[in-house]
Length: 379
Image 1: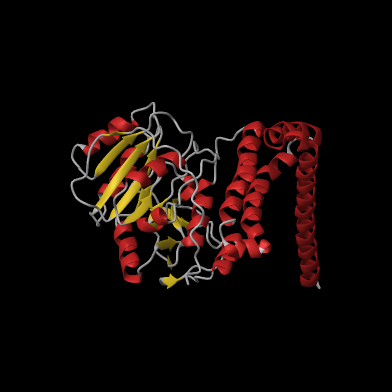
Image 2: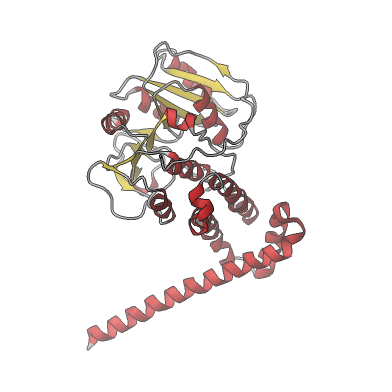
């Protein structure tokens, strides 16, 4: 019997009315899904990085989230000379990447699915490398560990740009393709420790897996990709990890996490992630016997999401007084906690206080070690 239980199907929102500009005449092997919103600065290089792939049997589904700039016009002009481009326009702005990606999934036709962000690019052989591994290993997912990153956080990428490698994954990188464990408990532990980071764009997915298991993006203000990939980890029998670097990640100052300039905006986005993200994860895990019988495993993904929130908000506790933050926290938590706000506001503040103590203790330990080391050298 398979270790992977089919989760409870969440009710999917009604499909938006979309305007399809151009059909693709041939069934593709890969559907590349590209959400777009006011991406005119980067979209040409992004789209051309797909069109110039050495592997040509793909469709590029460009889902526009009501851009107000020339993004759609630029892509439409490129589509005139390449029938592999499909343009879809959502009827109203969704406020994030989830609905555009879900729309792309619904109309996709490829055997495999790839995701690309509108300010990033593929290397010329990206799809060829991913498909080759997927076919050879009969993989449900091809998981790459690192991306190329323009040095000095360069925004505009040119032929002269120098790149370095970057990863949010922890642990040693693989040197050749390897089949990951199919033990779900071990996968969850690896996810919690940062070994399966949830970027969706540097991976390849078997479309049938996503459709059969009803894996979609939840409508969250941020980190929806992390939760999406956790669903994949819990349902994909064969995940192949590879050392290939096929994705160019461009530093974009207009991304949602970098636009959180005020403490109010940040607390709103991050508290939404902590509470709504926890609800989504817990509901998903309730469909698995492993999590029901092992609450310690069920807590790990939720703890991971909450830790992401606390890491981001730690900086505010160094810049604002306790009284200032308490008022903001209570106001934000009231949207979710109602009459229980005092209790949760206390927990919220207490956790940050303990975290700050731990950070300070860590600093003191490092200083003492350096001091002791220096004294021993002097002797």
